[in-house]
Amino acid sequence: MPRKSKQVCRLVLLLAVSAPALAQYQSATQSGGSPAAPLLGAAEHPYISPKNGQSQEQQWADRYACHSWAKSQSGFDPTKKLTEVPPSENASSREQYRRAMTACLDARGYSVSEVAPPPAVPPSAPPPQRERRFEHGSLRVPEFKYHPLAVHFDGGYSVTAGEARHALDNGWNAGLGLTWFPSSALPLGLRIDANYNRFRESNQSLSLASQATGTNVAFGYESLYGGDVDLQLDLRMGPRVKEYFFGGVGRYREHTAFRQVSFERGVACFEYCYYGYFPIVSTAEQNTSGWLKSWNAGMGFEFALEDPASFFIEASYLRLSPSRSRTAFVPIRFGLRF
Image 1 (spheres, rainbow, N blue to C red):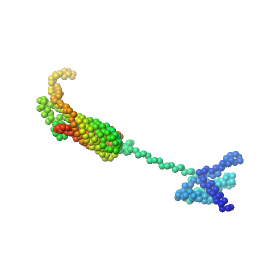
Image 2: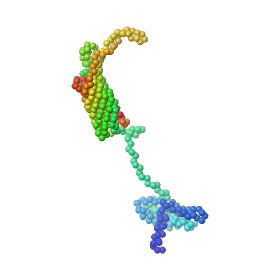
Image 3: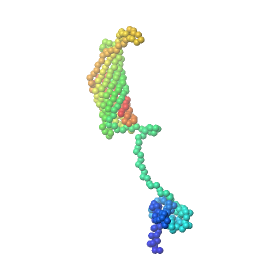
Image 4: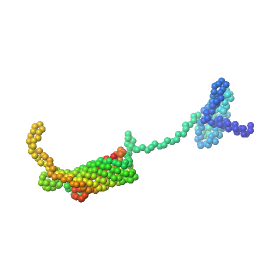
């Protein structure tokens, strides 16, 4: 046979052995009218995977060589049609061919399988990062998130300063406010506060009021109420803690009241009525100032809670103008911001 004809026959045989994905079946109809059985099965055209990075050309050459060797070992040729296969080539010969083919391919560095490998699945995108949290035993760390507007409520202890320490005892305070940060990139915002402070008059102040009014002053108090407009500068100390500074101007009014207690004769009735002397509280003196200018400066620390809530503690120095001996205070506040 000429050399060219031999090469063509070899190529035809190589294609018949090396095309498992084509599912080669005999489509012609036998004389009895039923379709012919498949020409090749999974045992005769196994799926191979190179272990050593063999090229496609090398895989075809190795498959052809193993086919030739397995055919010579078993006497079974899977490329022949069933009508050409003599009765002696039974299931035993087919099994011998399969084993010989598998052994040869394994020796040449291939993984052999009668089932097609699953298609490659592209790696899925990593899941989005979630907020760490303490929830059912897992970690949760609250963090500050940008909100342009925030409302806060606060209350705390007010300490008198300077000469006011002699006239007033320390008191308490309460307030509410609004903070506006126009940009997440700028840590500077505008803050508006409305505050109320309450102080008891000291014993020294009560004694002076008794002398001035000619009455027996029993107790007294001073109320300081008004508001501030401040600038606030935030300095982050971490994802859930920040330090801030604030300062500005405001307007406040002072209301001072002194009370006296006198005993007057009267009648009291419960289960029965009886005469007696009963305490009567009356105002000995009171005074309310006009709106006074003020300035203040302070600092605080804020801690993130469940967004958008946070907890803060702060202290400031408040001074009224014109300077008077009883108008300096240090409010210490605790509050929540939302």
